[in-house]
Image (cartoon, rainbow, N blue to C red):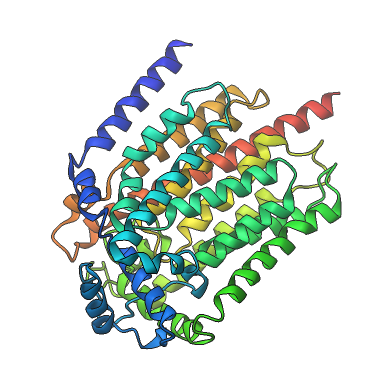
Length: 445
């Protein structure tokens, strides 16, 4: 190992350590306190209970939902300005419904146990991407269990561990040539939470491209399986409430986003950045109240990122061969990052989904086709991204309190977003550099 590489690794280790411990024991304390009474899981549990009773979910307002929560043994949840008690796609009730007979405490314990099992599976999927290299699956699991975004998942009883594992399973299937299975995993994830719908861009880009050695029927299989899995999940959920959950979901989505978009947990969202800077709300004071400008900037930034990912991620005939694991992994990573940052409410726990793209880009940095200078830049960007994503949300809160956060300090709450965008840049740089190297080699041969 060269002196420069050793120095960079040491600097990264020190920065990660300082970021990890910057909030002291607060993340662990929060996770311990919320583990058996996670507030976000409370919303899902009460909604599933109402659906099982055959009652309309559209009438589950904050007062009624909290009354049910307290009766079930949970703590009341915070409701903003008469907003909805529950707001998830109707199919998201499917994993929760079988847990309702266990009671709130039993259901919470099973949900947390399932999350830990899924985390172990995610650790194995991550380790297999760079076999024989540090960290091992067991060490991956230990690191993830103590990582601040995972602790937030445990604290709130959130879904990001499940989504991260489903996305990792989709990538594994895609890499092994099982495009239908990959599409089905992503479609099922989109049924639980809407943000994986962004992966349609990846699947359509692969469909419209024409990489050598990729038959058209195989390319068509993935988007069809995506749509099929999404539709199937919605059909299975339909008997529970029929159209009423959909009516409630679309009725309340805008109000729910407006109420929570400036919350200090919303650290990974482009929408959160513009909302705090130009809209304001109960948790943030804007530089200037300009909601139309914020909306225009958000649309422009989102369209630009999607367009760039589509152009960078679409296989082309002029490529000298199939993208290979390195390039295909970077293409997948682009859309995985977008699935997080384009979520209007991308809270800190969604950073778990970004571990896979970080590992995929690091694998691309190991590729011999990558020029040494580009390799150093890619690794530096990934290192910066991981350090930023590791800073606990509690650290960011301590930097901006009291709420509503003042305009300039409020921008610190988008530190995690900056890390995600650095990861996006690393994936783009790695894939383009490898393809450029191949093109140069082909022109010389």
